[in-house]
Amino acid sequence: MARLVAVSNRIPLGDNPSGGLVVALEDALRTSGGLWVGFSGETVEEPSDDLAFHEGAAFGRASFDLTPEDHETYYLGYSNSVLWPVCHSRADLMRIVPEYLDGYRRVNERIARLLVPHLKPDDRIWVQDYQLFPLAQELRKLGVTAPIGHFLHIPFPGPTDCATLPNPDELFTWLSHYDLVGFQAQRDLDNFAASARSLSDFAQLSEDRFRIAGRDMRAGVFPIGIDAEAFIAEAEGAREEDRMRSLTGAQIMIGVDRLDYSKGIPQRFRAFQALLDGDPSLTEQVMLLQIAPPTRESVDAYQQIREETEHLAGRINGQFATVNWTPIRFIHRPIPRHELAGLYRQARIGLVTPLADGMNLVAKEYVAAQDPADPGVLILSRFAGAAEQMPEALTVNPHDTADMAQAMRQAIDMPLEERRDRHAALLRCVLDHDVGWWSAAYLEALAQARA
Ligand code: ADP
Ligand code: F6P
Image (cartoon, rainbow, N blue to C red; front, side):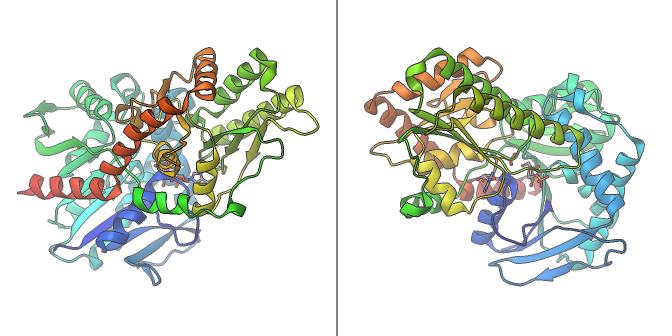
């Protein structure tokens, strides 16, 4: 069996990773073995010209450092101040700075150079996410002939958003060097085809085969999953002290997200405020536990979302709190997974209400963690990739405060039988399309793309 070499921007070298990509890839590599290469998280003035290898995992791990300038231009800059906002329908937050794109190209070229000496002829290379779009082109320039696939964890922008990029044509050239590009949802594949058609030299050859700038490649939909069995075991085994005891016995609504403007946290808080405003009998009966570790803090838009959410939570708590009850508890740090599983299980409502999201693994984790005999209710944004797979959730438009408040009310009042029925269907999806299914389906398609 050919070795799997996965490359991602970030490789977790410590505990408690947050972010769908690292959680899923860790699960996938634990089962299949192989090598995972990524950024160590360290910036140094003179990074080594070889990868650093790390022991202590069921698979090989190798990392590289970045210079402060590369971190600024490649990671904070082009990746997270250009591509991220454009892919999440927030072109208004994009900052086009020429040095960003130079840094992004330079780092991808360097990663290719670091990787090549460690590749074996029959490896399969699986590149993850938007930080590394140019990597296949750079590897091909260095003579790599192995199959190279890409998986995009975030949404792919439609033609209007794509056209706001400083280099839309180059984006499609980068993608054309992959044998297979995988997307989270059908909407992303549709956006890819529509955007490539309008912005590049593009032809669709069949349902999954495309020609861009004279190169043939494939693309398909592979919705990412979680290690459902393991997560269920984690939730069932959660110790009493890992669960939160609410002093007032209030029902818990839980939100778990990186503190990102795409996650719709202010919209969620406003809907909760509208719920409390509309029904004084809910005082001390329900609380919102929001766990949101900050990320990408040196980017302005992330500082703003932190200020906005803290301010809003303070205002809502000031408006409604009693001596015994704080309506919103807002926690800004990562939580160990077993503790998280226990909190999901205890929460009567899971709030997954992003304004845009590739998949959203929290939706799947919440479902897996429930007690099937007395499950909670998932409220899910129609803009999460997960909504295509999980129609039995209460689907909401996160921009519509009244719609979300109404869904919260419906979830609070939902009879046990309906909760069980909805949960059973959702759990089936989470079990059938788990992370093992995702990586196997993708890697099988990559093998076929080459054949
Ligand atoms: P994204 O990839 O955009 O961060 P996902 O919802 O797909 O969004 O993935 C988030 C992952 O990170 C989930 O596995 C979730 O459990 C984990 N996570 C998010 N916040 C925390 C936190 N505070 N503590 C621990 N894990 C977290
Ligand atoms: O899934 C989207 C993603 O950007 C991943 O690529 C990344 O690992 C995760 O979110 C967390 O983001 P960051 O590594 O920038 O903190």
